[in-house]
Image (cartoon, rainbow, N blue to C red; front, side, top):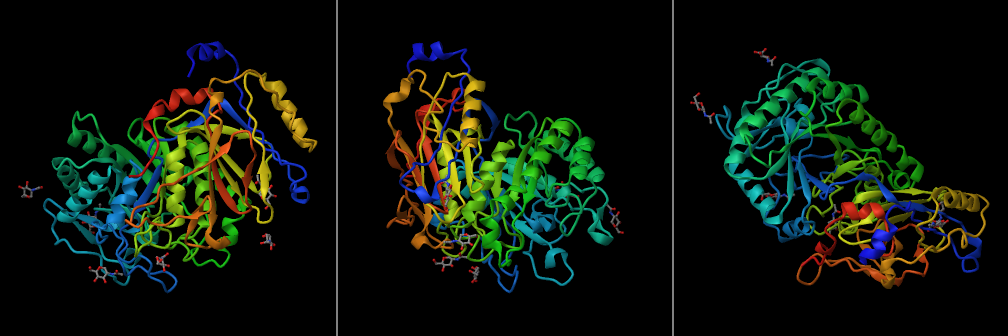
Length: 563
Ligand SMILES: *[C@@H]1O[C@H](CO)[C@@H](O)[C@H](O)[C@H]1NC(C)=O
Ligand SMILES: *[C@@H]1O[C@H](CO)[C@@H](O)[C@H](O)[C@H]1NC(C)=O
Ligand SMILES: *[C@@H]1O[C@H](CO)[C@@H](O)[C@H](O)[C@H]1NC(C)=O
Ligand SMILES: *[C@@H]1O[C@H](CO)[C@@H](O)[C@H](O)[C@H]1NC(C)=O
Ligand SMILES: *[C@@H]1O[C@H](CO)[C@@H](O)[C@H](O)[C@H]1NC(C)=O
Ligand SMILES: *[C@@H]1O[C@H](CO)[C@@H](O)[C@H](O)[C@H]1NC(C)=O
């Protein structure tokens, strides 16, 4: 970077354009003009380094939905922690956030301290909450789990049992104060061993009417004050005091408002909510729902409303998606674990980050039909690679994307990760035409005039070739190649369990390693082609986004050979 050029640009309004327009002639009959404007002067939101998160649940092998039992040995209690692919899959992210939690978390006791009962696993019982008895996490197992996490550099969020000591009444409402004894012993033990749990979450899906069980926002808020005092006391003056994360449930405006008001300033650090916006896992229309951008957009209201609720009632807290699996009841077999699911998943990552979601926890890392890893072979499913590409390419800074894009095109722009420029995620939901996109880049031009020019042009459906002029040269014009990562399903079968990157099926290497994700290099001045029903990341190195320098500071640090 040439410093004199840089300083000479300071003080200008910097507006960065990306013009996407189709090439006449080549695909005349399917021509659609799409204009996208990416604003590089300011970020609209910022994510965490460990934005990508995945969950490990408690479900035992006997957990079944729709006559299938898709969990196998994927519970935190019985997962094969020594499976080499598990460590490799986690390690590839450096760091992957892992959230331990799920429906049965509020029935878990910890085998530490003066536990009155013996430490036994979950058993199927009639009439039990979610059909199971309480279960116990043995201390030796907790040691093994932490051994894996420390070896793989995971950031860990642990969901505590928030029903402990309360009594069930009618309608699933649990009353009385939370009994902190067992959790306190557990946290004490965790600290004594030096295990890095960087965030403690309180309860699972107890908000609003709850799923199976609920707690009033008033009572829950009071309990949080206690847990905060407990954490402060146990961790003392430690510099890495963990975050307090709550409530890990479905967003309900009244309930969320109330619990933030009752718990008060600086108690809750992170507000987590759960998302299952695709309906039940056995819905025969699941694929159609995933490929329907209008339906996928509906959940943006939840993100927006949560953002408002936090701003108004808990501005000291940030928002995470604590658990999101798409289709509920263990996901959709041969849907959630196939290529098509990435249309939902990557769209979610893009959408949620625009609303200042700092971390997005996918249900699950392994287990159910929605695992990033195959429950039996531990090999990555398509969404694993989507998550990894996002993690390797998309930086923390989120840039605004405007324009009158087709309803079938989604475009999300972030600062590039660990290097200069901007990275686009493009999702084409349409199923017929191949598309060619022209990219132009302009800067130092007057904001209003140019913006209007573009909108007018596009609304008149004229060619956009002249909407933007070059104004000056950028220091990094020497870099003339852009990286592209095109994702398609194997054999064009949208429900394939194999994802294809730039024409090459993603499979484990002969040594059983996760393959390196290689881009194709394309002349920056040539158009981007996006096939129907496909997804692409495009890394634009020349795209000067003023806002990004401040955020993506470690430019050299990155890139991403896995091994
Ligand atoms: C789970 O592990 C147990 C004990 O190792 C084994 O007996 C059982 O077959 C495994 N179940 C599955 C579904 O893999
Ligand atoms: C267990 O209970 C005994 C007697 O009540 C008490 O002295 C001891 O400190 C307790 N231990 C723990 C780890 O809480
Ligand atoms: C729960 O019910 C038991 C038995 O009725 C009672 O002893 C206990 O105090 C209750 N606990 C709470 C927190 O209300
Ligand atoms: C796991 O992988 C096996 C072997 O490739 C495959 O047959 C199976 O469908 C996969 N399981 C799931 C749940 O996707
Ligand atoms: C494309 O999608 C439309 C609407 O879902 C459907 O009616 C049509 O059959 C699809 N065409 C192809 C070639 O798949
Ligand atoms: C995606 O493909 C469809 C046709 O299937 C086309 O109409 C649409 O404009 C394309 N969008 C982009 C940007 O590739």
